[in-house]
Image 1 (cartoon, rainbow, N blue to C red):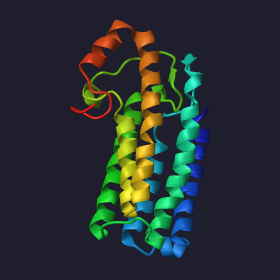
Image 2: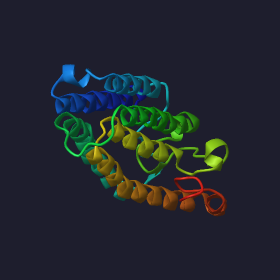
Image 3: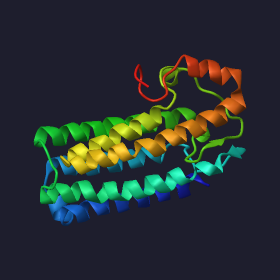
Length: 218
């Protein structure tokens, strides 16, 4: 799939996601009535533009674990709920907590997580696919951030979705972020099996000296 098509898919997804958040807030005006939510929009659009300069794709490559595609549908369903429900809970004051400090902490985590999500995409280039697959001329990167944690992009994803929930002061948003964890772990295990089969002892040695997702924790 070409980079342009991949970017258009990402752009449509972002528009839908922000549209759901605006709907949850009661409209575009109410959504943009708080500076922290304006910052969320700016960060989201900025990260989307940055993603256009990556070589990330949806290529099945030379070998794909097609049995893991269910994770994409799980992410889609949770993501749609995450677009709407935190904003709705913020507007209706349903299961909310904290004040502006929580909101801005959420914005910072959303930005930091989004940046961490994109960093490995730039590092891996065309080897970064939205599918669990071995790409042509696939090489194992074990230095830089990959010298510490094997899945930095997934860590960034988790940080950003937790940040999104906090930006709306939403307990529901935090709970939805937790729901991302099981399918994410399933995807990580699928990728590790595929990489172990492809790189053998080299990958096993790399796995021994690094952390799977959270440095010094897991």
